[in-house]
Image (cartoon, rainbow, N blue to C red; front, side, top):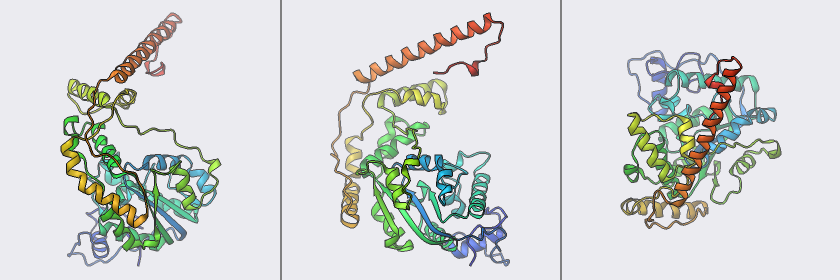
Length: 381
């Protein structure tokens, strides 16, 4: 049976033949009026890889660090027979491709529009498989972890067509730390306010999710990486997939650090003054430099998630022998603008003043030389 989507026509819900095939084979909505049958592949890569690694996340478990490093080194990997698709940093397009739902926030931000992005990314994957003919395909998408069973089965059917074997990799972190990090993510884009952060605190359900992956792909084909015990999660990942030339790897230096409470508070004030939820990346970079205490849930939020937290800790320990550490589920009294936060704000202010003075001097020098200063070429904060 041909895999879903290996064809030249766009796989959108308006495509009747796609809907009939996808609905009949992956639990997606069926177009009962269609009589045309499944799409015949027109651009099948014609190359079956020996092995596929699918890193499914979940989010806030060093996924960005892994993806950035793999993307940065995709040519080094390709030279040794490992294909990490180079269309984008991660393969978050896989989920909306198979489900044909484009509400994922990471997808809706893509330009020119989510459906075109997904279609182009998918086609790029097929083209790279056909041209590079790797022995190992590596995919990483944190939005797959908590996907539906129908999504997992659709993915399994596709991978069975193009790969002899498949390994699912799950990166595991202490559930409370992960929940806190995920909740803070909502404040970056101004989607929620700091006062509502406790309501977004949810524990990722490893105990519900991992058994589904084991059932569909086989328990022996699910591997875990405990980032709480890992010295370098990228090295552990590369060793797991069979890549041992780690000395050749250029590791990502991108930091996806969380903002302090002081930084979050100032961010909210800036948004209110601008009457917009949008924040420039340069603004966020500066705000992340503000030190001080980080967000920690309040008493009511900790009580709400305590049972889920204990259940996940026991499951990971009993079923996977993973010790992800214990956390104290007691609220912590913090002062948002403590001495460390105030000192860091003063340091940032001094840095910005120095940059401003330097820019003025350079602009004056250019003007004296009869040149028109170009604001884009001057040093930035």
